[in-house]
Image (cartoon, rainbow, N blue to C red; front, side, top):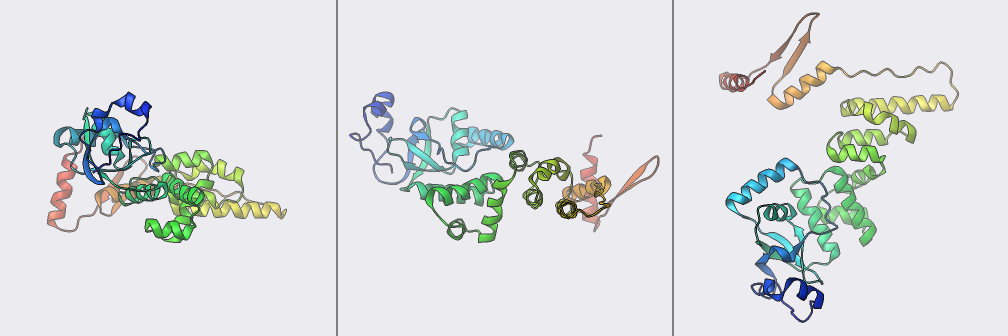
Length: 294
């Protein structure tokens, strides 16, 4: 339960909100029901982007069933309760007009808050790669942790933390694309492997249309050309790179349908071949195809 220190809040806070908001919040730590007006987000929350579709679904769920899982908060010096985990639930609860929210109140310093927020988001896979990297960077710069210590605290390997941090060296345009899902972290690392910064900027859009392996090969080709140019080697041939659209499309369909897909294109028409593995699988595939509207 939350502690109530009516003498330590300061006149400004008490005059603004009134003590009545805190009357039902008992002392000590644990699970309590807090007034929404006393709960605030953590400005250092590693997650910055909230998926609109996911939020809409959560709002509908809370509107119907309420909040099943309490959020986690700590009591701040200003008398508010700062969110450590559960900001999405808090945002959704505000959207449906709830005036109270169940909360698990713990004691935690700034470093512990950052660690817990990172861990909660990583376990739920809610962070995009750039947010994850920025969270690690905050732990290292603000709290003077080493990469090894960060890895130990968030349950990751040191190389995975190091690879995540490398993303922050990307050009801003590429960071935005990674954060929005326009390119993957694998594409980003391929971009970073290009030694010349101007070449990186020139290659971002083109590499975003490739598979990760294609992007890695393209980066190696660019570096090789730069080496040849710097050594004044004559007759340099620029790499010609084209993405096989049909192969990439077949891979996308394979990922969606969980089966081997073959696409063939002739001069006037083409065909798509879908594999099935038994009668039940064929029935599932047929049912899925019947639902398609073209």
